[in-house]
View (cartoon, rainbow, N blue to C red):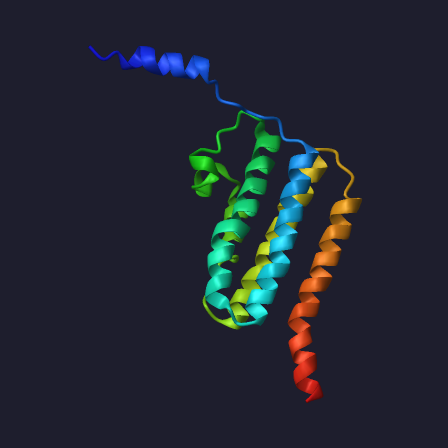
Length: 168
């Protein structure tokens, strides 16, 4: 006979679920990757590569946002808080305000919509990240410098095309 209970028990005891504590190095890696992608997305949008931008945003870009939201909830409610389905189905485990703000981060395949969704995503990400860093009692200086530099670059990317057109 197949005794699945013993097999499951053996697997769960042999390979316990790793529940790493969230530390500042994980958050730094996340926000550095997010801001790097933010600049790439701005370039794609400005080049009118909207489909490529949307594909990248919906996979990589939102992965970093979802991970930060997951850490925020675990820091707020305890490291054992269940963010099931690998952080998906946010409406079941995330704060209602965050879920409400998530509706603004998706855009359509046109320039203005993609640009607005990029800025909305940045706004939500910034809000969540500041909360995570404050819950970790971290110094916000490096994050603020990185964020300000990135926003400046993104604004320059979007404004460069207008400046070139006005000079012609």
